[in-house]
Image: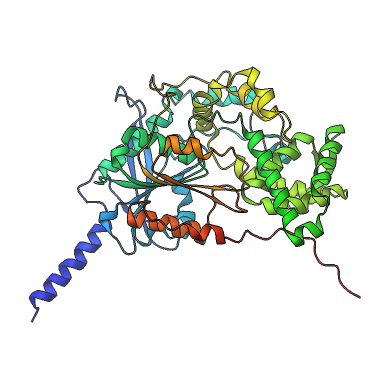
Length: 482
């Protein structure tokens, strides 16, 4: 005989199961799916938005959605929407990474591809580098002629004026409403933090909390301060090495050796060899000063503690380890995004506000120099203009309860505490020692999970940050003893 209590228990279980998924009557139809790199069955769907949100006519863009249901759902705490970086990364392609963070233990996690990144609306441009031209990966992604070719190809099918961050923010809010959510939590990293701010500016009433790693603000005119940020990060890396007994013993003249390598490449390119990543064949490369500098900057995003070892190999005359590491780093970062969307956003929302006379003073004294800014400015000259709100570049404040995280050796330009406080007065800002771009470790995960669990920054315990042990520096192999 089934008791009333059993019936209540069954009903509770069914209710819990249903609460883990958006309502079947919502405007988003989700079906079971398997995503690359993920063993569990997830749910995927498509939500169509107008390319032109203002006229609500014409072409529609199919935005892919990957839904990761909470293992132990607490629907009163809201879902987590993850916003990817770039700009140009597709959020749904990062499902395996996001699941590894454990955010879905207690929250539904929703990944929505930004317009211009997913199937059916991908703004791809051909990369300068290729399997037949590895060297091009080391010379940066921006080239005026390549940008014009990309523009001409994309304009055949896309209205490039409509690929803006405000439109993406409104896309996200439309998806939120269609899925039946009132308030959401935001997890964002790098350029995703910029999209998160624009979402909060336009739809802040629907944001419960936000976790923002490696903050990019609207006031930052990317890439004007790339050189300054990279120099600051490298100086901190040098300092960390000097204060680390093993690193200092292995590389006692690191600063001087770095300058020696840079000066050598300034005089003339160095011919070196790498193992081809596909064929394995020994392949010749010519390493220039700018290629070396940009590779250092890019490697510092994720593997900064390999840099001293690679510099010392180079100063000893072996540039091959550095070239191979730089090639991997540049290929990963420059081939992972949709360059057409990157142009749409950076050219119109950032580069357009850089004045030519500012470049020299902003980059003077840095190992990177001014070429990176000038390349991107030149590539943006003929890119189509986008349609932005008239008050878009006016200062604003966000009242959202937030945690802002940065790494001490992050090579990007990090806003100072006064700017963060002015922009996000209710935010807690933490700096992770020894960490690079978008720090992710047990400590930062614990802080993020507690933020999303509690829904407040009041009393949030961030003490673990002071106890974080940086990853060890890469050291030379020990010489065998006789």
